[in-house]
Image (cartoon, rainbow over all chains, first blue to last red; front, side, top):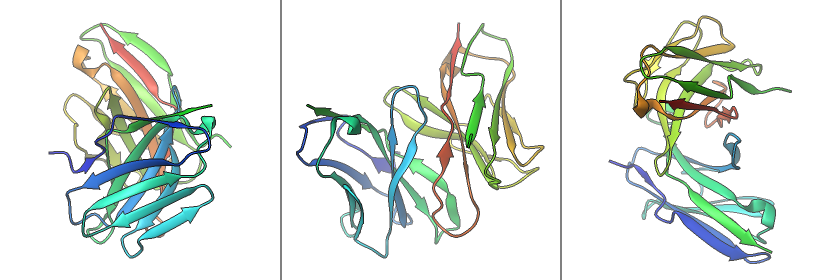
Length: 115
Length: 114
């Protein structure tokens, strides 16, 4: 039973365009969401997060949108750069449920940004 | 600033052998975690610890044991390795201060069981 789903295994975009990575969740107890980026042969690195009390969080070229009613979040990268090519993981936790330290990860989406 | 360091980076074992993976963090974090990553499966939590001397089971704990004797170290043990344990293992740590603290990951240990 997958609680965090990233239904697109891969995404390819042109440099300079927008990349949109999607994530859906089923557990209504999740109230904190994170995106991680992973390069080959390296560990995941934290990118951006959002609390369920917000519907948008922005950090430079990266923006995360949360639609609680649809249990859906998305990561927008504008403009996309070749160095953004990596696997992106969506993760969720339940702070109100007392499990703020445990993350449930999606399977990841491989983003390729073509020059 | 080392962050989270995993030892070794690569290892090949024969079925039935045992080994210990070491994770060390220098950020004074209370929480530590072990994950495995398999193709098409994302990251799955094996065991975690919320402080020195504590451990708890995650999503896929069978076949593994852990110990947290020192705050900065979290050990993952395989007592009798099986081919199904061939995977990339990641250790992570996070702070207990505040809410929603992100986890910081090491670069992984690639383990092959023949």
